[in-house]
Amino acid sequence: MRFTTRILRMTERETDRVIEMAWEDRTPFEAIETQFGIREAEVIKLMRRELKESSFKMWRKRVNSGVSQKHLKKRNPDIERFKCSRQRSISLNKIS
Image (tube, helix red, strand yellow):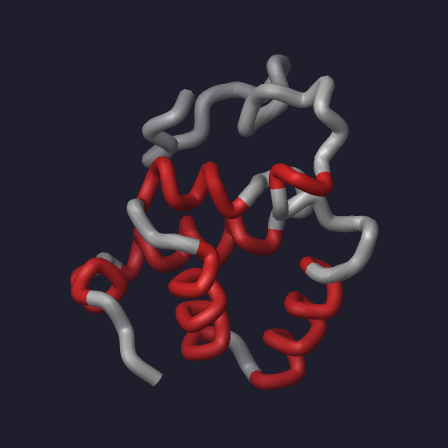
């Protein structure tokens, strides 16, 4: 498995934030790319590396289910933002 230099240079704090965002159903991969500069395929590699195998499989199953809105194409077109309008700022979140 080959990692980009961006993933290899990420701090532990950034890695934790990407994992947190990846687990959130309503945070699309595009938001992660906007904030951290890593594409969906790279997020998948990162998750595979950082999670236990069973946790990774559970995450992938959820992402590919109808519950998750990780892909903007699957989202309701009325949702035009990456976060809830009532959500307070999150530390390290460049979008807020």
